[in-house]
Image (tube, rainbow, N blue to C red):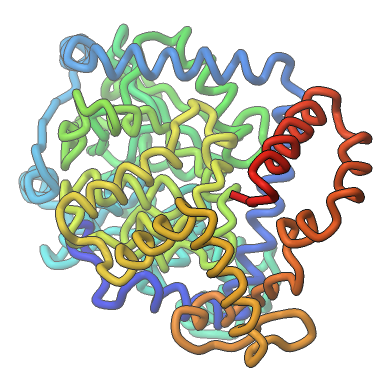
Length: 504
């Protein structure tokens, strides 16, 4: 699945497949609920949570606004530390640079820690075509690699699988049945990967944050595999999105406080590694040679864009996925790209600069704003989804039937007589499809809605109709209202009397 070419099916078809997968729905619902509860508890324990969010947003806004300065500072300091720095405009360049490094080292195998950028670049496939074995060492990534799938979640790649499915995958790899017990399964993976660590010619990592003031890169993890990847192989290649910069270690304190709490509900990840260059003479371990590939791949398209520049503030915590009611029902693969959930629905078309190819995933949202409330750096993703939908319409790619329907809706709502007539017609017309006070038919435009829920019937007598039929009762009810509202309602009633009862 390419970052620049979505799945052949549309998002509705993919979502329907997910909704019909009971295993997936249970697994995603269970894990996202656990993560949401963990985040809630962790944020409540931290005093002044909103102040921390405001500070994190300020850091990211400032850094992205001065990205050229901080990138140059990082590069200067990293090179002074002995790091080889490379710049890649797109995914093809990034992959090519890494393959040339591997060829120069005559590498046959590589171990990888978790990295969404390498997923974005489809690095594993490129290495396989070059005859180099690239093994994922994060447990979740290892599982989906065996399954031949992409990540379903930014933080927990195999969120869509339960232990029975995982046991089946690992049993095939082991060549013998493994019990669906987490201790047994983790023990097998641990033994298998230790061999890979010792054999690997290259270690490949992502980068959570890059510290401009010292030229250091920082990794957050819980399994210790990233530390093995960055210390055992003789050559390390780090793929870094160009926006991963923060100015100082002091700023890292803010991010290290918010990211784990937002991602998994932890106060701090089990391992946080700060790497400043390759191994020195006095160091016991570490790579002899270290490369950092700074990847653009569409990120610079957001710079200067008043609607989407804040997208680069994202710290990849996954909190928006856990909060999103759409993601919690359909999982990540239904979004069709590397990134899923609200951030994926915006990031994927934005990075590609191609609304045409990805014109459906921006609609896979209720626009409830839960993603904004969950985001530790306050990215207004719900607004960005509206902006994407607007661009889609402005480019002439909107649904013509939907556009006609909205024009008709606007015409009815703009005139009280048309609105009243439409209500009366609907009250009569709905009788053939109403059962027990609900519209359950799956015909025409109601099919999508009623496939998974029911539509309440229009009331036999609307509030407006009841109001006109019982003015005395309405006046009685008005007396119990808030004084300000009562005054306004009494004024409206007086105007109605002057117009002879006209409800308009």
